[in-house]
Length: 209
Image (cartoon, rainbow, N blue to C red):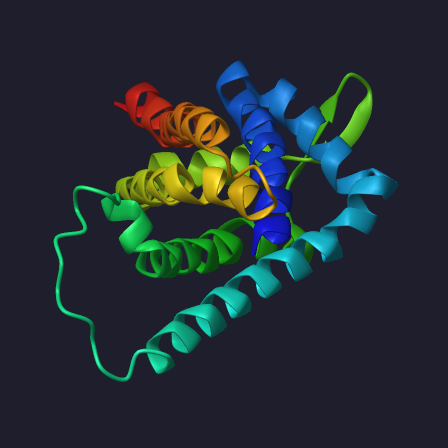
């Protein structure tokens, strides 16, 4: 869980960096997207990324089921709110919401990029697929998808508030000093990711109004 989680965190950083160029204009985003879809190194990493997602999802379900089986009789109910966060108590549920969003996201973007027929544009003398048009048309035409995307960003941020520091803790950074540091970093990182991804549909809602 920790290794795949950190791998997916690195993917989120790259993904947000590229997606943020949507707000810089069509040429900037299309060039970045063209690089990501044609670079040999990225093409090699793509199946590894998919494998990372699959392992992370399956193993999280396995751990959740194991925990339930090991507790056939529930412990005496205690007030855990003072020692744990809501996100840490509901990581599996948050992960489920993120999975639903991921399926919607892949069907609207990845599937169309890989198997659809997109219009092409010329950028600095290079012909490439107009991925900016695909993304902007979806956000501008369907306001409810913007809402779904924003909710996905919120669920992701909540998931990261616990998942980020817990991943490093599981790998050995488990003393009191580093736990405090990692929790603070986790909240900052979660806010950056959540606000970053949510700002993209908000941007298109603003320019289309």
